[in-house]
Image (tube, rainbow, N blue to C red; front, side, top):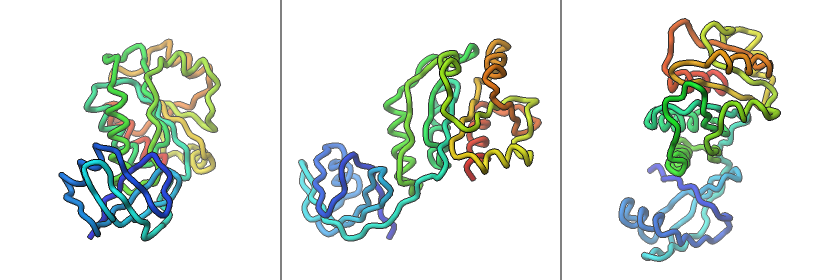
Length: 234
């Protein structure tokens, strides 16, 4: 039987005490765990640790370690700068980008962003649940909303930065693929449904960010983001 994985913010030693009320409630009420059942915990340090439940009550659960194995952590650091789009669509991107291995997701406000806010805590929960489900050993960082201007006024800490845009170089082009293969720190910029403004395109050019395309059709922002992440990481 496949064991469920859970992300925790604590060291994973030989014996662990879980006292988070929401976690214990989920284990007892949803999964109906009892003494002798097994769970897998990970904390982003690179290991999946299997524990046996020794005791479980409404206040705490005592676990003893039975197995330690390496978990998958992406070998590339990909930062997705995604313009704020409709809540459900942005949440879908967070889920799929997590599954694909994106390291950081940064919501940005562009001139044509129709929506101006997001529930940051919900996005973090979605990322955690996606990491638990897909077998990933860490959880991507979700940062607060920032304006595109503020992003581009700083020095971008990436080896290569790509701008998704109709008319750009084919993302499948050999020269682009070679850059991606050789780079460990990559940025992807995905705009809103209305596309980038002329002023924003000018800012991208000044930063020498490479314009790339992923096809001849006009993709929705969430589709473009997911496809670009897949091309970059798979």
